[in-house]
Length: 173
Image (cartoon, rainbow, N blue to C red):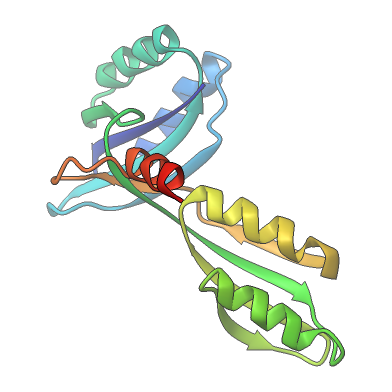
C-alpha cells in the first residue's frame, strides 16, 4: 500500500539529505517527493508517497522523529485531504490532429502553455488519478516529454472525504 506522509521540518541545509539517507539505509523507496515552505517562517513541508504496510510506516515515522530537524510527521493516507500534482506534458500535435489534442486537453482542464509546429506542451493540475488518465488518453499521439511535481496534500479542515463523495456520486449516476 502507498502511504502519504506530511513532514514538517526546520528549513535548514541538509535536512532533505538526512531524510532521504534514512530511507536509503533502510532500503525504502520514495515514490513521490515535494518540498516547499510551510505556513510558518523557517519551516518547510515535505510531502512524500512511500510504499509499505502500516508497520513499516510506523517504524519510518519513529525514525523520522529521531532526526533533529523533524518537527512533525503525519501519515495522512486515510485522512480526508486535498491532493494535487502538476504535470507538464509535451505531446506530438501536427496540423491534422492538433484540434483533437486540444479538445482532449480541455476535457481534463489542461492548459496549452507552448505551441510548436509539431507539438503542444500542456499544463495539467489535479489529483494523481487525473495525471494517469490524461497520459493514457494522449499516448496515441506520441508523448515526447513528461515532468511531474509529485503529490502535495493538505488535510481537509471540513473533514469531507472526497473519495466517499466520488463513490456516492458513482452509485447515483
